[in-house]
Length: 68
Image (cartoon, rainbow, N blue to C red; front, top):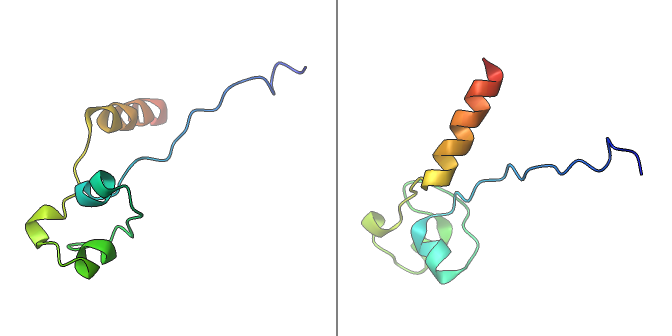
């Protein structure tokens, strides 16, 4: 096997669904201020939030260091 092909690629997709969709394990269309699923289920705007988890910020920092 070629060593170049054996390298493992890191997943770059970040979980950016709102907390309500993540909790309910449903697809989020990521619309702001209220995603489609929350709108359909009459979820109050203050509950449809998009938060950053600690590991997301570490990935962003790593990407910024690579770009410098």
